Image: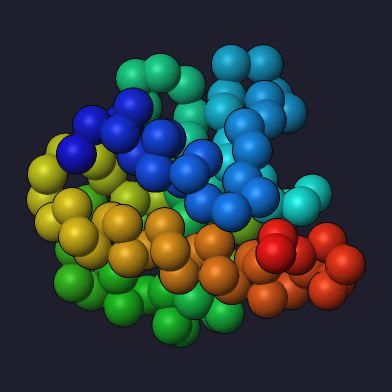
Length: 115
């Protein structure tokens, strides 16, 4: 899966939109919350919420020790950086995007959730 395909997948989610809060670094948001850190084109990894806490997110690090790492600064909250080098199967990357999106949507106020 290419970085561009992953960006398109993220932005196809209901209510998703692209933002650039830091010059040159793209993120995918729903409401006012980030659900995917996409970086700059062409990206080599994606940052996703991989669990409610570090212990749960560490399962990714155990399964893919060379392709997954705790995200800098926000890793303790369950965010991981997942490599786009083919080590993680495409279907698992897409499922991780889905899970990150759903986790973020669940925390949004009901009035801010996409319909």
